[in-house]
Image (cartoon, rainbow, N blue to C red; front, side):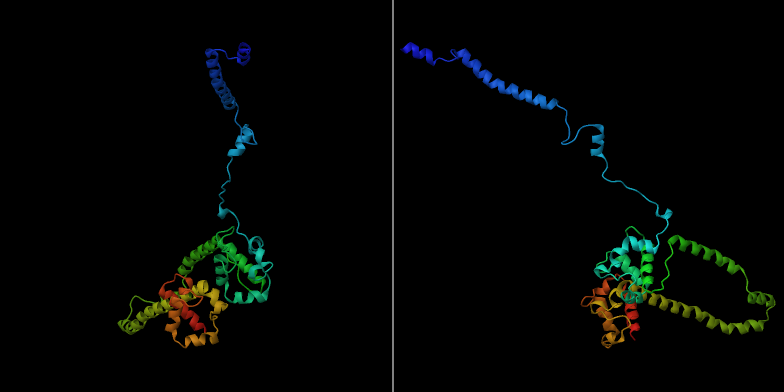
Length: 311
């Protein structure tokens, strides 16, 4: 009975040597399987997911994202105002979107036209309200100015279309060439005066010309003073048109409108110094100096220009 049970419980492994061999195979077999899989996948050709490794596919994957094209603007003709309007301005001005004055609407354009062409050009180039700055885009400053003239003239203005920089340079060159020719051509008065002059000038004539020297010397000083005043006034007008006209030209945000005596009367009653102080330091919606970087002297000239318009 015992011998039969012993024979029944014995399996394939009957000796210690067989046990060692089975353990070794159990450990080495998975190692060889793993090494085989690694060799198989490492020797297989690589390819991008969803693509192939052909030369055409590689070229497509490494191609440049964009290209840079340099154009010589001097060789291309400047666009007309109508072309710039249709390409860039019509998006808002054709329908009056976002508060833009509609093309051809004389009523909407009238207060803007009164500000002058420089103020309109400044608003177009620097931006105003919902309109972003137009400078630095597809068109240059002269082309944008032409579009402004085109829209304003369609609403009743009579502005002259600005010339391109090349045209202005050519005109300046012609004027410069014409100046020497005009200077070389003597007038009839000069010719007769030269003919009448004699080398033997009497002494009495010389002494009679001496008293006139003092008024002649005073004339350059008076001219220089007048020139300085003109430059001061011109600087004030320029700052008004480029900075102040945005609010004072239309009376927006409670700003006293340019030339409105009734609106300026209570402010002028406090005196010019008080008006200048408020304008310099800012008040309400108006930032200091209207947001400009003008010098104190030039900004004072702008305030004087505004004040004088209401007197």
